[in-house]
Length: 175
Length: 197
Image (tube, rainbow over all chains, first blue to last red; front, side, top):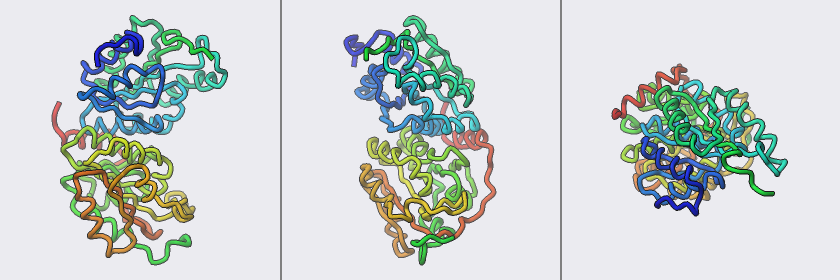
């Protein structure tokens, strides 16, 4: 699939292409509007493996397994899924398994659905409580460099990293 | 201590080695607690075996990750009924991805042995083989006696579709094995085995 901008913003296409260029070949995801570009593109891309998860922490374990098998992957989740990962992140902490999570944020800048707010507030603290480095992105121009920075921290320094794609970047959904 | 369905069941110390056989050519992931003991005792923790000691629920998705990353290698994941019940959705992910090189053995003793043998849901009628089949795993089987072992071994040797074998055992303890708790060391040994950059 080419860069179809009717599918989603340019920064999301740039991010997908750069991840592939950096050797990421497994995209594990839960359904998410903010991640619709990498989800749709990975599903149609014969060069990568696109894995639909039922729960976010499956992706944490799956990417640890992929690392054992010497493949790089990325986990695409929403902030509401950060809490579902908490105990599974023990794996990264104790085994120094690399992890790059790309987290689309809800419940912050301009949120209109009050149900999104608690986990939106809790996402970064709960990730940090488990030792995950959080890199926030607010501007489209910073997405690519931040994702590459996170990927390098993950796969060169054996760290767990979350790039938080903030609501200021993505825009708040009308509700 | 033994649950109502544990009479006449297999002893895992005999049944697990008989079922798994020679796993030296496979990549092996084991979930925490009893299965890690079973697999540790069986493999003596060779570099091709990664045993979890926590992260409950990780075994199946971790095995799937290995299988997707290493499509030319056979991957065996061993888990327990308690761990699998915590992450039933992972069976749906296996069914959706349909990796031909992944097999899953669930050692089902109907109890949470690690925490004092509270009965698990499988001793109250929950059938994990039926759930695995319903999740889209095409090759499944339940082992209730040693007579079933040869057919189950044949199934585990299949390389054309994912396999799920439910091994129903008694609440007798697993074989004891003093495994490494250094996950970084075990990770590096496993990865070194696979070479590459």
